Image 1: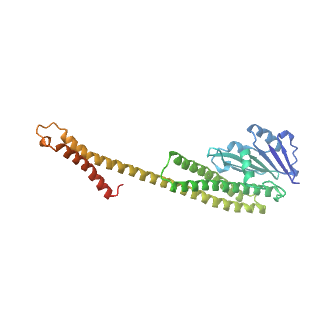
Image 2: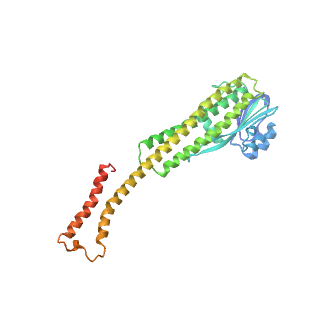
Image 3: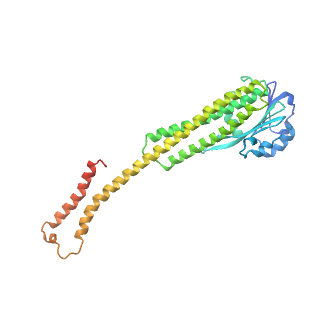
Length: 317
């Protein structure tokens, strides 16, 4: 779907590029939602865009994610999208500015999430967006809010798991899997957030940054720094959580080893006595005793009970 925002605050939606009548002086934003890779060539020709950044999304160099030329500014980065299987999935976002128009390329899933977290997103009646600068900064703010929301979501999941762990002494393999999932999601957010921060820092230093509206980039950078601190808190909580679970597992293992040790010692003494009387010696005076059998049985019982009393006094159980 293609959404076009006109300077008269009119919004038009199109399903095909061919339906669009392109008048740059009347438009300040065009959004491509759920676009296909096969559409890029037609989009480039229709709007005169340089889409080189689309082929460089896998590059690690920040220069591949922030491309500035005389007539166009291109930003591209990935943003985590929460899926139903508890894992984040990276989605690409491209923002291009040319001819005083903001061109945005994003997936339908990210668009839906943006609309959910921002009640009046792209609502011209409630949001003052008079120039493409205002719209661009508004988009940057929405993305910052999205990062804050997904970090808050991860933080809540970590706290809930932590509380559950503190109240329980029984752990399953799935609990450790949950920690691994949360750590992986937190890592994706940190990588994406770091990439976005670097892009904003380059934007801040840009020669094109002549409009006062771009001073608000500083505010967004400060907000992202605070969010990055919360991400580090999440990693610290996960480390504590992992340590707590491992500590309790070790305690449970120690209890099991203690029980096995007690059973082994208690059985070993009677076994030793029975082993002695199982030998084929010719002279064993106890065999001629009238009370020899009950005495040996009593000795076997006492040799089992005395170690239990000893370990009980040592508070092993």
